[in-house]
Image (cartoon, rainbow, N blue to C red; front, side):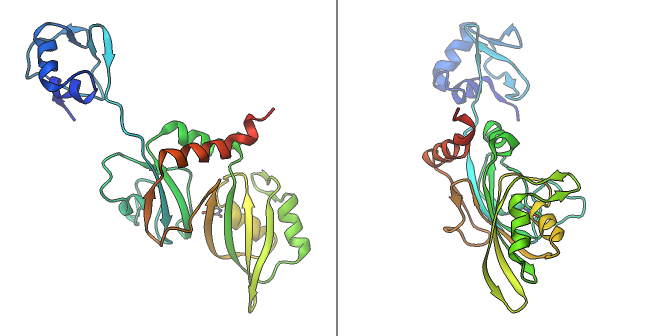
Length: 245
Ligand code: URA
């Protein structure tokens, strides 16, 4: 969205609006290489290159990090041709354009992170970082120790063998079991496909943890901002395995 040059300079932290006006009148400000002395000039912060005394002025977006308890029945993409509900519909009163980090299936509930920090999203989704994700999967039938061992050692799926996972039965009820499964990859529908491969299809799936962040303080559909400290701790914790020699 276009804005007046003096407002842009103030937002970019160059000077107050009044002082910015003086800089403009004194010919210190260029837009796309041309000196601008007209105070009303409008600029597009996304497109125009503004310099003050030859240094580029930029409006830095505040970085936001959100932990959301995604309910079932929401998609994690930002648009849906079928018009289904989107996780972004749940994020109210946040000016920044945040996007989901990774994905959860439409029918999966649980912890989803959203951010406008591309580096953070990249770290989280890059396979080399092996970010831990913990799920509770209600499955049909009761997997045997042999089945669980297959999940732990690796299962051949259509896109290759899965990396070792942790898996154990939390409880059983009637003819179903709740399996707590921890994976370090983020393949499409991975937990559902792993469970199908051992012939115990998922009836219900919930992600309860990513790295050291868990969902325990949130109710379904609720979200909260992560503090700077939480983000730092998260990244230290999550990437420690890779940084160690
Ligand atoms: N694994 C799945 O099968 N679905 C998800 O949404 C997340 C992990």
